[in-house]
Image (cartoon, rainbow, N blue to C red; front, side, top):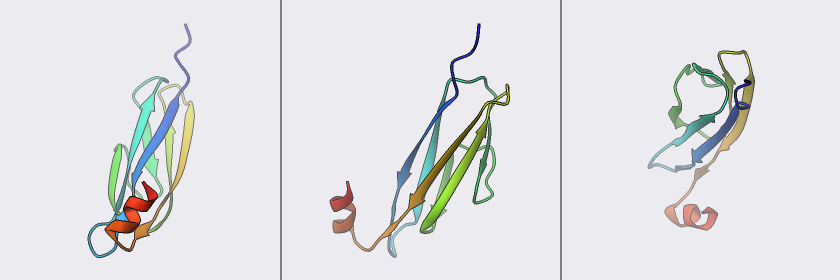
Length: 88
């Protein structure tokens, strides 16, 4: 039997100016574990990265069968709590 297709998704939290930077959590399903993850900020083999400044980031995912996934996302730094509520 073939394994389920490798599926990935990303959950991001934008930062708030002078309060916190952004973060991202990678969600992986299907494919065959173990998974290799390489983030564009240099982190490897973790599902959560934090302390992200504003910008575009990627996560490259490879499973044990060399199936690959790519997630690209943007972190924004919002100027106030009110702006965060407007986006949500």
